[in-house]
Image (cartoon, rainbow, N blue to C red; front, top):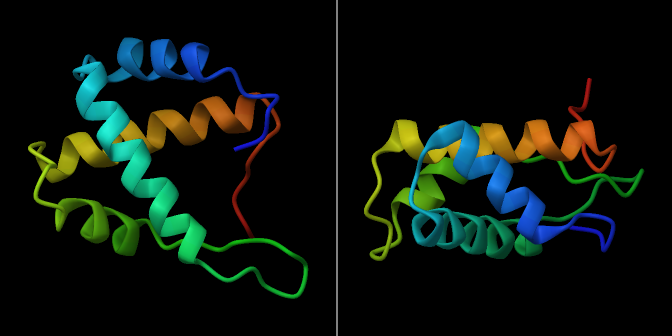
Length: 92
């Protein structure tokens, strides 16, 4: 995530969209970051993440006490926020 993204603003946005506990959101986002840090960029320097693989990775962590749908909703809300800020997008 670039420095242009205000983490407090991101958290407030995700909480408002999901009604999930901020601590649970933080856990999900931390696991997502770890997953993405292991991903290899393509020739254009872009990282292509399969949402199902990401959700499976997060759900496999023992400190994640959320259901799969809530994890997906958190990730979707984060992506919507990042796209709105011009920080992320979907690959064609």
